[in-house]
Length: 217
Image (cartoon, rainbow, N blue to C red):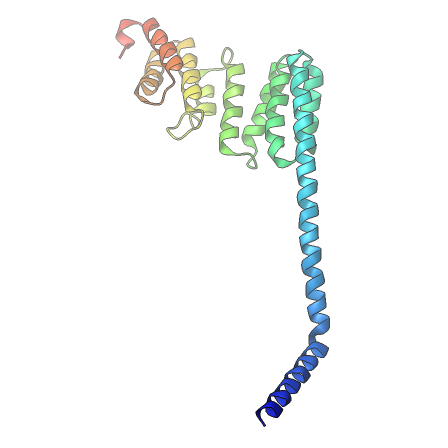
């Protein structure tokens, strides 16, 4: 008797499963197709992105080779193209390199390119500071200290990635216009930062020695 009940239960289960399949088979099949398509699409996207990154890396290397061969105009054009066409990871690097290549033909144009990077909120804070510092380096001999301070003070903050370079440029700018108070201020900041690189510390000490006795710490 129990075997008969088991067979009846089995028939009922099969019937219920059949009804469920008849009712939801289209949904199940559609879901399966979407999953397969999604996995395939993601793999395809990943492959294309990896291919683009590899191509951009190769193009970046070719542009760098042009720079090493002193073909600055060609290198600048190649980096500028990468800055507009390459994947996101290469764009800012390419913009920075394009600005560096522009220095040989027109320093003011290079400053403009660096300033554009520094003002771009889509660029990382560290890269923005690097652009500010490179522009300031080009302007050091011609720009008043107050203008340099406006450019670099934020980058010289304790949390700045390139704070050491920013502080050195500010000290040099102040010294260039005989502002001994500002020069000493930045030299003290450099001296009191335990993470100041040894080479920069040495240069700061040399600049400190050039100050008049009354202005020395």
